Structure formats: C-alpha cells, structure tokens
Length: 315
Ligand code: XMP
Image (cartoon, rainbow, N blue to C red; front, side, top):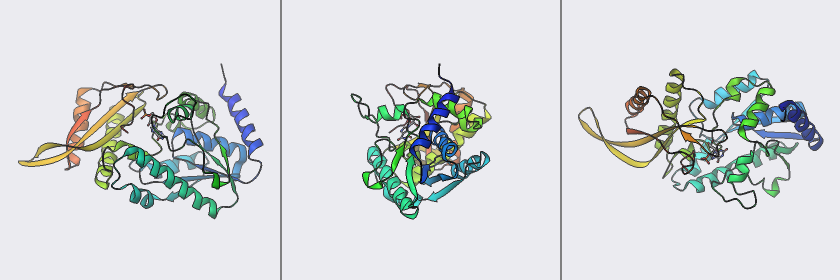
C-alpha cells in the first residue's frame, strides 16, 4: 500500500531535478488536480512557481473570487487573468461541443503564449493531468477518444518549454489523499470536480449568453439547496440546458421556456457513475426556485441515467 507522504517526497524530488532553473507556470482552476499540482510545484521550487488562474468566463457564480481567497489562505498567491471576453467571443454561436472544447484549448494556448512572451523566465509548465484524462482522450494506445479533454496531448512545440505532469499516473481519489497529506483544507480536498472547459460543456446545442446565464444560476441554486439539505457524498452536481423548449404558464400567460436538467451523481473516479436519488421535497424546492427565478425557464427535469451509458457531462 502506498503512503501519500512517500509519493509527495519522490514527486517533489522529481520536480526539483527537472526544473532546475527558470520559473514554473501553473494554470490553476481551484479544482483538486491543479491545486495539488500547484502545491507540489510550490513545495518543490518555492517562489519560482508562478500560479495563474485564467478566467475563461465559464466558471460558476462567484467561483473565481472564492478560489483565489482559498489559495491565499494556504499561502499560494494566484494572479487572475481575465480572458473571458476572448473565450466567450469565440464560443458564441458554436453548436458542436467538441468544436467548443477545441476553441477553449486553443484560446488557453493563446493566453499562455502571451503570458510566456511577457515572462521569458518561464521554462516549465505544470498541468494536473490525471490518468482517466489520459485514457479518455485516447492518449493510451488501444483506447478510443470519448471526449477530447483540452489538457491532454502536450503543449504546442513552439512553446519551447518543458511540461511537468506530476499526477499523470493517478486517479482522483489518490489525488485527494495527496491533498490531505499536503495539509490542504477539506474544502479543497473534497471539492467536487469541475471540468476544465467549465460551463461550456453543460450547454447543449448553440452556445449563447442566455444559456450560460441559465446554467450558472441553476447550478448556484442546486448547490445551495443541496448544501442546505446537507446532502453529502456526491461526486458532482450539475445543471445543463439545451435548445428544447417547454410551453409554460406564468401567471395567466403562455411563456415558452428552456428546460433545465439537473443531475447529481456518485462516483469513485469519474470513470463510472450512478445517478443519486434525491428527496422529493428537495427536488421540488430546487425546481420551484429555478423556474421562479428565471422567467425564461419553464421546466426542470432530474437526470436518471448512470455512466455507462451516459457520460457525466452532457457533452
Ligand atoms: P465525463 O463527462 O467524461 O466526465 O463522464 C468524467 C469526469 O471528467 C470531468 N470532465 C472534464 N474535466 N476537462 C476536465 O478537466 C474536460 O474537458 C472534462 N470533461 C469532463 C467531468 O466533470 C467528470 O468529473
């Protein structure tokens, strides 16, 4: 049985041996993978670690501020780069989700490139790629591409920097053990996974500001109600929206609105997942709030398929 302390020591040693000089850029998201990566890099190279959070405009409500504050509390300074207009400008009107993932990956690369031009002393980039990301992106021989995770496949050659992926052989639960052993707070260790492309993969059909605002608010309502009801032990809770509409009545008027899908799943590693039964009153409260707070939403459905066959994110 492996001990997290041993893995931390050997990983920190590896990083030190590799990144002997120059700064190490870590793009963090607040998620457990990039946070543990950042903590390991900081432990290995101290102030030579450069932590940035690229705001793609696809985070949840209040998430960027909350994440920066949490990092500060554990002694990690993060610089926020607001690139939201650039990301959203390219995503608007794009219907194909894989195309959106590609755009997001390319835009991240662009922002990185600019960052590196401004910081020529950066010689390394560290990423929190996990083993399941590697498999699902088809990077393992004999596996099929299920979703092209933007963070797998290396960096463009012209970056001219080295890539460090300290978590590449690990599953999420193993990363959580590392996080706890590194002394990161529970809020970070047990934070639910959130996809790199953010809310963009929870919008089915055409991407637009209206649907982005709907998933953002619906997610906030869902998380708030789950927290109030003290629902624990879930892997992920999410809201998604597509182009299907449902005719509604608001007051005495016909009001055609969007259908919001909410979903809560349990899982050990994200490779398989089960839908979680929720209390009927809780579901009813969530539904009433979502339709009540958003005039352009007329219906809420609860997602009852597991993975397989349905992946966790809608696209
Ligand atoms: P799926 O939807 O493939 O998701 O069943 C499995 C787990 O991975 C997360 N996910 C992603 N994470 N970049 C990420 O960093 C991505 O492109 C991406 N797509 C899905 C998802 O939230 C779930 O926890």
